[in-house]
Image (cartoon, rainbow, N blue to C red):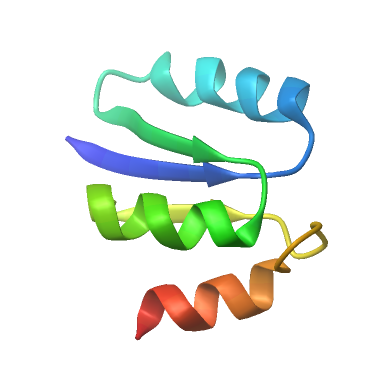
Length: 71
């Protein structure tokens, strides 16, 4: 099972992508976040295999969030 964290500031996009990914048996979305700060917290809590992160978001952008998650 591949675990995924989805991060985007558009709720409808997050929801749509979650349903598309979870239509595959081997993928499970373990968490979603609407900004980079939430993404860092969710990644620490769930340790996903993959993170799909939007670059342009409020509070903390995706580049900084990715940097912090990798640390």
